[in-house]
Length: 301
Length: 293
Image 1: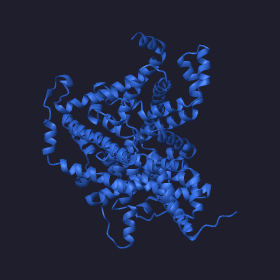
Image 2: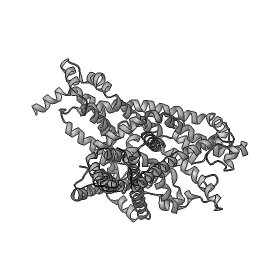
Image 3: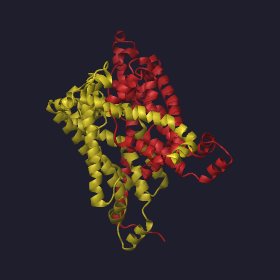
Image 4: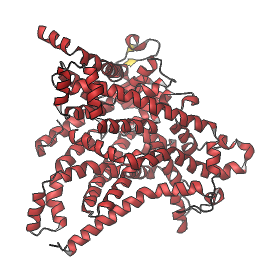
């Protein structure tokens, strides 16, 4: 006790420096965690969190008995599954391709260009997508017009939404995603490649037997993180692209929370849906981590 | 000795090259197309004649869009949010990262747990919104500056960087009786220039591009960042009030598409222009972050 007091006294200036940050975390990160209690209340703004009536699992039950729940879970899961299938491997393949380039200038320029979309705002990117797919002036329909196919309103057809969304995601992040893999590739011991060369291995064989095993831990860690996020799709980019006609495939848990909570003002109901979402996410990331620890001895903690 | 590639290897290398070239075209083409469209004669845009290069040449769309007061206001707001926001971010992030980088700090472990836990669990959209509301920040510019003032990742990134600095200077300064505050501002920060620049850039680009907090926290258009005006013009298609409403009839319709392209360029341009000069910092930052993460 005395020891601790002495240490506090010794570090008092450091603790003082830390204070604004700690207050920030308490107010904007921990107070909202406490605030999730409104999911179990019939929250209203006048009574506040301390006086609102407790209704326990009413809103959770309402959500699971409601008409939207399975559509939302299915859409959220499917978007993530498609992301795992198409968006996840894309930067790995591109990183392997970058790694084969020998012309330093070309390598540098092409990498720089491929990183660019990562820094472009979601609104600009969604704007590009809307313009490209516009039935009256969009490039996609101009192209189809060359084959005498009449214009299609891509963004009004639920069947196309996932493809559009996943493609947009790949465009935005495939280049940036290569950074971590390129760093991992650079860390592979070059003796392994020499040994493979002496054995007469082709490049493809080296990629398969040296490069991929070398970056496997990184792939697994990113995969675990992705699996933990399998029930979350950011609302920000979907909100810009979807509309009531495409809700059938485009509406996900986070956009639903946004609409019910902030547009309709059903705070408690929306908080309940959001809480369900984050708890499942937390369980998933722990489970994926545990399985990976057992199976491959790689884990994030 | 010259290494001769086998035919298998040559195929592999060429496939790689083709893939990279495809990605480069796939990335650049949308920008070129939008730029060309924005510079073309609006009639040619209307008639869908643009594929790659501008047809005719007209700055009409830019003139109209730059004459639109709201967009200019949005631009000024965004510059304000980016500059002030980044300054607040950097002050709070460094004040937090430095004590945490001192290995013998009292309660260091508890503080670190408190911070990293926020990476796996968060209260979510609604409770955060209610906190911002109860602090009276709704519909004020504070709502875009304070709730996102510290990014947990960036604290960890900066802390890691500080930890890897040579300890000798710091020790010497302590012996000379310098306080923790002056060590941070006189010794640590000047030594951490690369990390400092990288993290500021991450924050600044984040502010420039952000639209979601503005959409949920702000009602008055006078506070809107430019991204929200972009959304209004390009995604919600509200171009009428830019060209002066329906009384201009055909001209409004004629210009509508060109205006959208010009707006996209105007909003994305600052990032594209500074990007080549600052990209090396980003790549480095992502590297430190990912290896330690």
